[in-house]
Length: 270
Image (cartoon, rainbow, N blue to C red; front, side, top):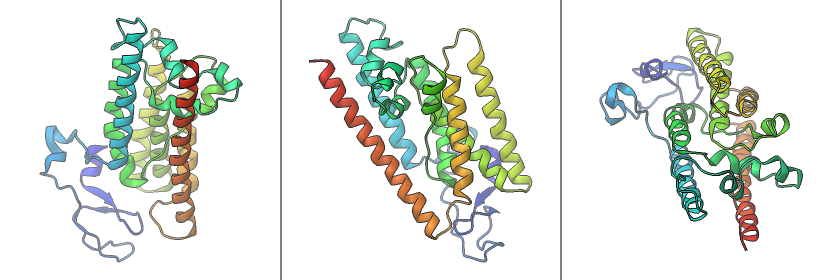
């Protein structure tokens, strides 16, 4: 996708695909500012593998690593000498893993907090690598989106953590973008991210990997559905205001979920 977006971008007014050389959008005739990131700046280091970093992606990564450090310290104090590489189940449940026993007792906040937890060093590094790249690309078009653990709760009795359900949501959002744009660029986007989704689900079926594919499929469906219903991103109007309000509601929901996790954790460790 980095090569694809290197010569193309989206008009900030009508969100049509234009070239990076365009100063006036040929579709809506609005003036377009030069691209923020040039071909020769620091975001194109190492052959273009480092994307233009985005604020929301940065915040999510910091939250993920902050929680990983906290869970590692807690696990070590609980007697797990291998905590830095692999966290124990008790620690993950204590910090808000998707746990069906807790969900049955009304702890629905776990559907949110689980997406910020990781079971081991390899797990968080792999998810962060994908989020670092994919998150910047999706934020350039949509801003940010997450979702998918509800399907996991319905389909799987396993304890589940990880940002990969949200990452599949981002892939679903990009597939929706490709479906909406019926042109060669849209087809290229659609084909690329469909392959990402298929590879990710197949990888989760390999023996030896404890992967919650229900969460992945749920995230993929949620991301596609929300992005498709949202329509072409960036256009002003009532619907755009509604989606912005929905975004702020999601932020509030996340904050409340973490508060509930903290209160539950404090009560259970007395």
